[in-house]
Image 1 (cartoon, helix red, strand yellow):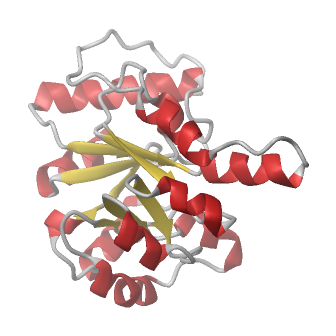
Image 2 (cartoon, rainbow, N blue to C red):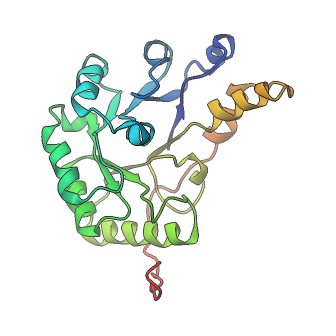
Image 3 (cartoon, helix red, strand yellow):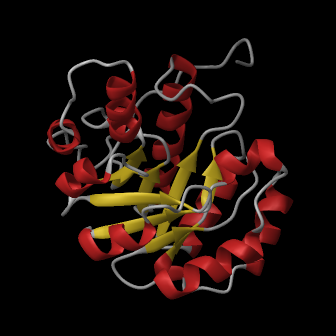
Length: 231
């Protein structure tokens, strides 16, 4: 499993300790973009839809232009998406995306139909699982049931795409076979510990603990619980 650590990191003296890691750089917070390319193993370019949600929405054309000179193996980008949008809205953004499928990943929002997940998995070598309002709390009982349903459907169809879990590093070591995940846990908690005047925590040490936790290689079919109350 590849662990993508969200940026930016401050101060720069501590950022240097993270050299050699895999990074997630958001279009909404691109401060460390060049440094991550020069010092990281690989970079996942996040379109920033989550951050832009309260700022009028993501500009997909601007993101496409920004990421173009940075997009080549082993780096890849999350295709622009609409959080809580319907399938037609997601399709429109995917159709507008003009970069290689091998360097791109669409988002299957967990509130959308399983058939849409299967379609994306048949069309792209890599996909992302993204939370929606109904499944916002990653790791909740409701979220777990939906994740089980999704992986059961993929396995029954004989599909094993690279599945990346957005905001999902907390799930490392759990039952789902995510190939990669990202989180800003290290950047936020390290910054927070310093701002509260506590003893500084080395961000690399925090990342090392996270990186040591791996997900299973394959999915085993599980019994699915009935959603009697529509929750």
